[in-house]
Image (tube, helix red, strand yellow):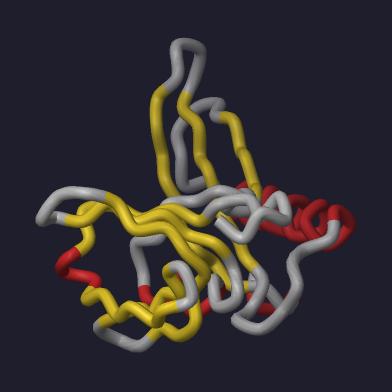
Length: 140
């Protein structure tokens, strides 16, 4: 149902809140697409809800949340990096310190970042954590 809408499934997580279980479904636009409009997200939410009502995989009541990853998201998969080409990121390195810059390229094993005008390639295994950043026009 997500693919039928032209979107891709990023993750499905189930957590417990104080009141009831929460099923969170995160969808994103395909690599190269600009994003997801609210009408498409609402359509996907209704389709997921209907499918879950039919399949009834969770006993009792639960909350369903269908959303996008957001403007600032943790980058944990190669596809996440490919969607960030041209965008700003901040990387915490395993060796210590941080690198911030604009993603130039992403491969199966590394990402190349423009750091102060210099291309820097960093293997994913050398990253402790990485997040996309909102670009307020500062370039950093």
